[in-house]
Length: 316
Ligand code: AHG
Ligand code: MN
Ligand code: MN
Image (cartoon, rainbow, N blue to C red):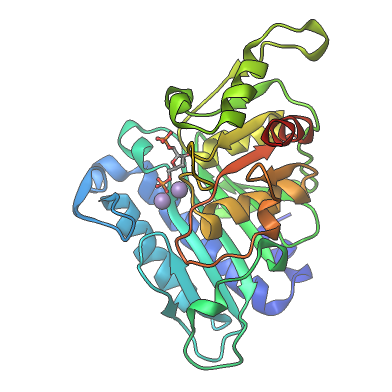
């Protein structure tokens, strides 16, 4: 089923914005695949609001998404990893979108998987300019969330709150087609995915969890395998299809981790729950967290319910 036909079942405002995001991602998929030929590899001479070096493709992706979102009349506001504040797009629009335009920046120059992550809410204010408060909404209030993986294939994983659907980009037609109507994240997993080199910096629960994953126990298929791409989109695509757990835990003595709540942790947790998996910061469901800052960071443990529950047990 073409993506455009799938969208006929979706509320027209939401369908319009999702169509714009999908169109932007088709353009970005082409840019990613030709980045070395279009002067889109390497860094800009700039850092973003979070003090991170901005890659040329981070900036390009943000510009493309801003253009396409603005072209959707339903899109009232835009928040991005690459922009300090919120941007009003259409004052009469009903929706707001938070995006990580290009996830996995460290993988751009090595042609490894990267992606685009997004979450959509209904705006809180009625009309007019958009405010920060329009974005400070829980994941439980999300209308839709998804991500596009620019991997060996370009894949769109999406949920509008009715399970998780997976679309593949047909490079011949330039259109997405449904390939799986009900993604089910396996409840049990045998893979853990984390930057274990940072283990000494992570909270006690993470250390106990790694000890659990690496010890031998035939009945639970341990030790588990470790797989870590370093792009959340890539690591989670595998996790959704094969099961396992992805974690970027809280640093020792802190409650927050590296990844951002509004445009990384919430959209991925929305998808995980819609697919029968779980997403937590160790103490609380990610989707229950009330955001207080636009670029708030959050610890995340996400994937197969048995492994997420195991981490939660170590956090008590
Ligand atoms: P971004 O490129 O949007 O800043 O996100 C990178 C994130 C995420 O994709 C990945 O899981 C994580 O950073 C990797 O971090 P480490 O390099 O610390 O492992
Ligand atoms: Mn990211
Ligand atoms: Mn990014």
